[in-house]
Length: 397
Image 1 (cartoon, rainbow, N blue to C red):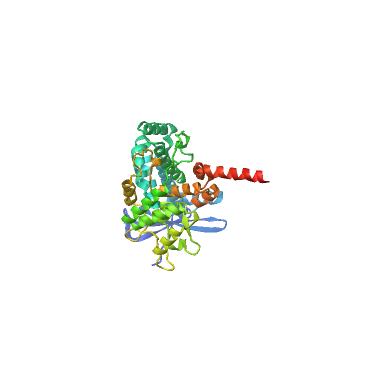
Image 2 (image 1 turned 90 degrees about the vertical axis):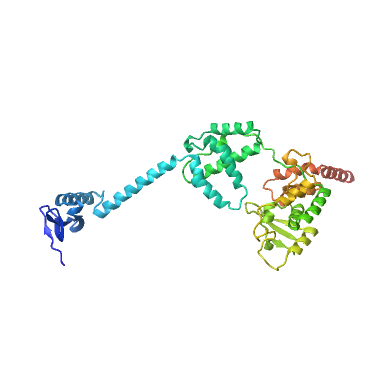
């Protein structure tokens, strides 16, 4: 049915009546309006009287829109006005959410944002339980209730003093501060903070973490013999680490396509994915040949009972070390035998045999020569021989 528009007493405003619906004693009326600008007429539908519209209100809106068109500011239609109001409302909500986010405490941020992301990215990382424990025991009681803007260096002086007073090693202090720094960095990514971590301003005791223990040839022989009786796989991983310097995690990630029998080499990848090549001895070459079954396979070389990736060497290695009393009377953790001692042994044997430290650096995958120089004291005899040879050459000229 064609609508019957009627003019109102206000210029540019018209309406039509609803056929049946009433508003008060009168039939409900729908209002529309128009205004002319640049010789063009613009029509705008507004709404029903039952929704609060009237001839006067529509007329005032029309004049406002017409003025906005002329001045180039503000909405020129009801739809534009609605969108601008919605945009303003959304901006207000975002500001309130941002203000609320900036008022979040460290504990709330840790539980709501950092921890879920960290667990997801480290789903197979055995360090996560340690991180949770350090946060719960040392960080949260001191600063968990504080907002980020209220966290100051003095708080980390307090954490440091509590740790040292409890007799904790400097390494534990390093772990606590490193965990907080990661949380702070994650908050920085989300624009919660824009400064460096206050923990970085605190002086910390120097961590002397360099391991000094390595196996003698006899100890390594006894270790391998005992491991073979307990677990062939742990024996094979130990042998490979002793003969190549591979880290435990590098062995866990080793797949068959990274093994080159022809070149007698392995491609290892460290925790950051950086590759390096190591070379096989006769024993390790024969051991891997025995394990290899397919001509080409992407399967893991060492697997757990379910065929998946290993996350730790397990208790077998520790039990055999205890049985052989390799740690008897040892109190300094740096002198205690562990699976990592196999890698240290590889480096130490090389140094004793006179391997150049820069060559050893490449074999171990060290990032700096300073890390490799810890083995330089084992090369005293080799240096002495080199000096003697140099002296003989001078005399013979």
